[in-house]
Amino acid sequence: VRFVVTATQPAPPQLVMTLQLPAGQYLVSIHVLAAIVSDPPGSGSFSHLRCNTSPSVGAPSTGLILTDLNLGNTNGSTGSGTLSGTSPMTVADGASVQLFCVNLGGRFGTLPAVHWALMNATPIGPTAPVQEDTTTG
Image (tube, rainbow, N blue to C red):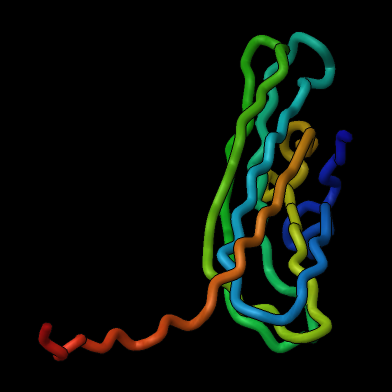
């Protein structure tokens, strides 16, 4: 599914997808494939896409993944690339993990399109203190 990112900075980023999770600590990863096609055909174009993943606004939480991708072409063909990031994140009760994207290129060039995006959350927990076994035998 292609999602055209029309939000340009300083406008707020656009919501691309949401992942519902129970409250807890997670290792969250995102992978995004984005592309631009020059307009008009045969012209060069440029876009600077930024995507971030964070728990939903208004819910107490920690963690942030922020990645940037420069997309460009000079001969009118499709310019594409991938961006990814991984970060620990705490999700509060009632929150969801959300993927947002914004075009930092402003009005210069062509709007980027997200062709696919993947969010993965692996539960992690606080680590238990290690205690040395002093028994013999």
